[in-house]
Length: 209
Length: 210
Image (cartoon, rainbow over all chains, first blue to last red; front, side, top):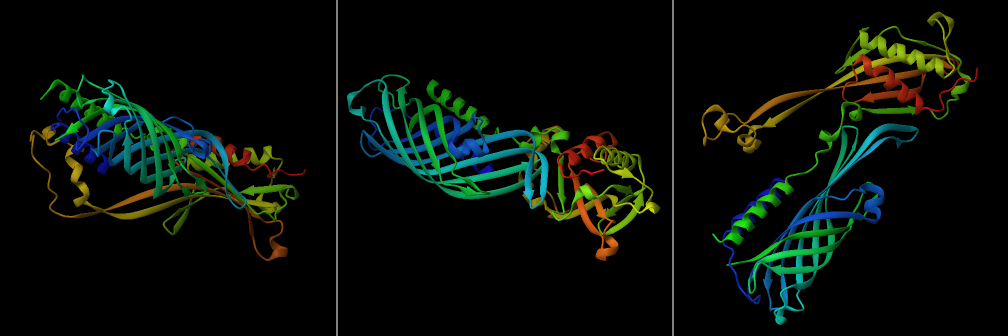
């Protein structure tokens, strides 16, 4: 968590050097997004069904040409759910009555490519699709009452996304982002498999000198 | 700085705030929710074949390997609760000299963990206690020694049911059932009844045939 916070402090400092530009080619852009995530599949069924409104994403994207950019994406999402007291089998001929809490933090570090099909058209609203792959650091703590089991893993992650970018003003390289993305994170710990989610993000992008 | 960049910096600050908003699970628990109740049993035992029991009149206090017998108000509350729920399950309390089928012992167990704290890890001390509080804004903290020793004690309550009925023929006293209570507030007499009730209600096999 501390490292993530430090990373975003660095991003904040870099934002002071943001400049406007009207062409993407050769340009380094910073995207900063707030993220709300919805667990899917086994993640939702077995671990956490609550949506997580506690997430951020940041990415540095370099313009290969006007339509394609590639870069590095970092993120953080915190999932938490507390289940009412129930009786769980915890061993041979052993049961435990407990309030069960699951706490999961995912921190994806991804190589990302983004395609903006209308970049040459000067359309005010620019749709995009993106694909990222890399690893997610997954911190998983499961609590029975106040007693926890914890595991930290690096898991393979693929992320596909789509959305729109709207400039603050015409011909500005900076603007708003709005989008959604599907995350597949291969995970296998404590008998739980895969942490897939659908994330909705809103934020800003701006060029860096 | 342009207005949009000021906006950018503001939004980035908001993102920082949101990123720091991890829901800390322990902070979301009440004292009652922090407690866990663990029961285990001998699968070979036929609990319906036992009819009578006796419970020790004091509690063993086991602390880091040494033990003593005590009877505090809390201990008495647990003895009373075990009596109540054993009788609800159909078992009859008899004197120790009347050959009870089951003997029950209650134990308070304290484990002390000793650790070493590395003060050089206290890099964030100033974020917990801003030097401004002491009238020295802008100063840093310095710890002239690196390590300190700490001790943490955790208590738990254990209830054991012993097979006295078959002890003579087996040549040993088998543990039939064990209940463990851990968490906050377990040594509070007001929580004794609900704790024992939970252990007994999740042990549905505990039932005398009489």
